Length: 313
Image 1: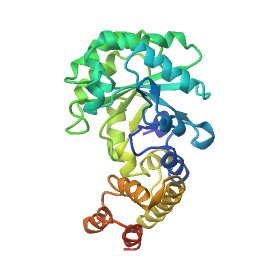
Image 2: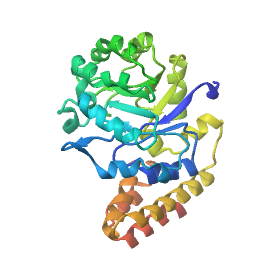
Image 3: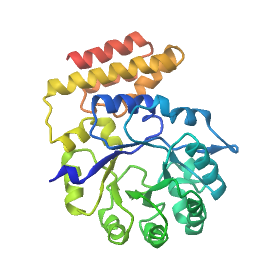
Image 4: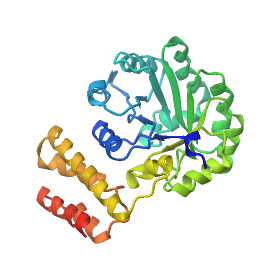
């Protein structure tokens, strides 16, 4: 397979892929053409300060970063776009895929897919920003896969630089198998450049998707890159890494994260919580007893000793 034909985009995950993580990932692993920020949203009529800090251009070193917004109305769309565009960004991604019930219950993210009129209203202001390229990340639907088919004609008529379609419904969240038959129905009718998202964890997964859907522009990978950070580099570079090489790179990456987070988080507890979160996906093949030691760590010394045991075992 000609890997140069396709691009890999890092699908964002709330609580994981912040600027520190993105910068370190790009430095140690690579293979990703485009990174996205976790969604930026409006709370009580204003944008969250921590969301804006995360997109500051001077603190982001990845080659291509696209902020993602989570609007629930046309007014929120304008507020978010004005704030992001004001920082110099000329590409913005729109989230219609978040499956979290607290978000979806407000008719945002994947919860909006049930309401085509609301989708049309929220996306209408795209025409007001000709200087900005908008992309869209969505799911097959909230309750069932037919919802995306109701929206395809509307989306084809809007100026979108790309669509990333997660081949699950919102109610599935990240459980169950992606519905490739439903994805194919959208794939056959979608006019903007289309990317596949959902359940990619290995090189064979990437190749199977791109073989079945050769007109795709590439794939979005989220959790698969959290658990196997070299996956994109292996695909794009046709590279194979020996176990010793992998562990050396993984350890350097971990140490970079530990150092960077220690400079911005306050106190041992915050740093410990943040680093333990990393291991919810990172290196799932690690011995279960060692992972359990990490999760039960209550002091940084316990944590660092447990990590050292993983990388020296």
